[in-house]
Image 1 (cartoon, one colour):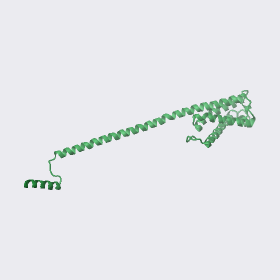
Image 2 (cartoon, helix red, strand yellow):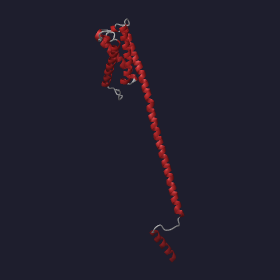
Image 3 (cartoon, one colour):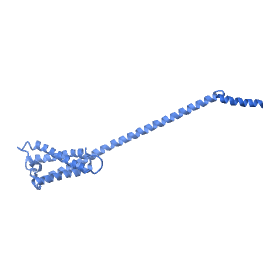
Image 4 (tube, helix red, strand yellow):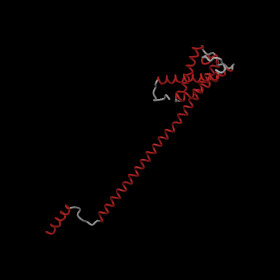
Length: 212
């Protein structure tokens, strides 16, 4: 969506990072509301940024883990739509989770839970690898269309050139046929002076011959 000319545009990169981060948190918030909000009395930012909420010892913790993993899968679609280039998927995925790590450190301190690192590491791997795969697949799907268009244009130009060549050939044949017909008609017609000037010249020549 944001992809344009192949130039380094820092404002474009910042806009892509902000959009990707926002839609990721919107998706995470929606999933947490559906999976966790029905099990707790009150939703808070603890489930977003506190590493202690990611635990495998409770059902609520598993719901939080599922929300993070499903958000990473949704992030794959965001990469395909917002980033559009396979070689940039890893950079934007790592950037998203580094920003998330920084917010978690500011909110609740350094994540000391192994579960937090496993879940977020899995999320960044899934998001980067699957997003890169889908972007490559999309890019490869666009190549035959371009080739088909170029081949189609080449065929049309070749066909038009062939038609023009045939038309010129037929025109030359008709021209030479008409010319031959005119020359044949000139030969078959009885000889006679073509105009008055020729008549005078020929008459003078015959008169001089008779005097001689």
